[in-house]
Length: 549
Image (cartoon, one colour):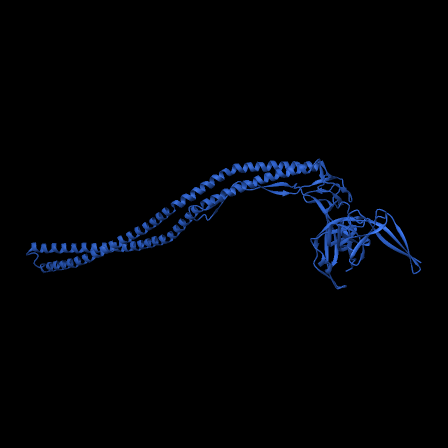
């Protein structure tokens, strides 16, 4: 790390003015030599005495760029559906939660550009805010203006149409809200009725089954009775047949009784036949009833299954309707908020179009593009015929707020520097002017392997009027380590010391040189503070000796 280190000693903003008002010569003979003592006058000054770390550096000036930040893009319409609704969980509850919307046009931006007609700036030129940078072609400006005006008309028409269309959406949302509330209030009653209907079907099937079973049981009891009657009738028939057989040979001798026996037998046979017919009929009926009982049993089982399954569905419907009723206010709010947002979005598109047109008319004055900042031009990126659109770079200037100088200091010097302290800067071209600065950045510690030292790079930002500074100017940067402000001081060479006594030489009213006691304070190595004995503007003498053989 190459360093050109200096210990800066100065008299602040006031530079000691050494005026030679008179010279006094005194000849002194000593050891064969003649010594001539001469005096010259210097003035007591008032100002600041400063000590600091000084390094030389060069000026670095940052740049500021002006871009064409005006949005001149055209709005391209993408027509969405005029009306739509989406439902959530339509199978649950009386109706699903639906989201209604009336979509208007949505817009995307399409880039447009204007064309440079003439360029009014050159590199190195100093310009002021408000100066004309470029003139645009009239046709390209008017084309953009016409498009922006059409965008305003289109977005306004879309907003107005959407407002009308959404009136039905608000009505539909209110009807939906009322439906959910009504379904919720009737949900339990509907649930109970549904279960009762299902239970009634179960009971009806059970009654039918029981009726069939009772009929079978009744028929079985009748069959038992008929079987007993049949047994008795068959016995009577057998007895009658026996009587006929016994009286068969005597039928002609006693025809009356024989006829009675025949009639009795025939009657007994008829009774047996009738009972057997009844038994057969009841048996057939029971077979039919058993088939019907099977069907009734299946119907009852199906009714029971339906009761259990439909009970679950009814419970879900109950809970869904009650839930929808509980969130109906929130749903309605979401619906209306969504519709409001759509309308606000459409209105925002209209406002954006109006703003773009207003900004365009304000920004483009007489087809000219105007400078926003003052400074020296460092770059002119455009030429005649080039296109200008949003974010196009227009000009680059030196940034007067970013005038910096960098110095490199050793670790020991860095520790002595107050980062919040004052920084004084003098330039080679302005040796009598002291600029002020602030430490704006300090690098991390770096190591110089060639010297074995740790060093820091300090960036100082120059304050105040920097209009006379240019890139590459050289100067000395002093980081103040100690300073006394607003004190009376004089050159160290004017002070004489005799033990603890300090004095200066002055002329009295007769022009004779006399001694005058003073009290001294802080010294920057060149000048010393006078706390007592002298005042600003007093004249004192600096003594010099010249020896001659």
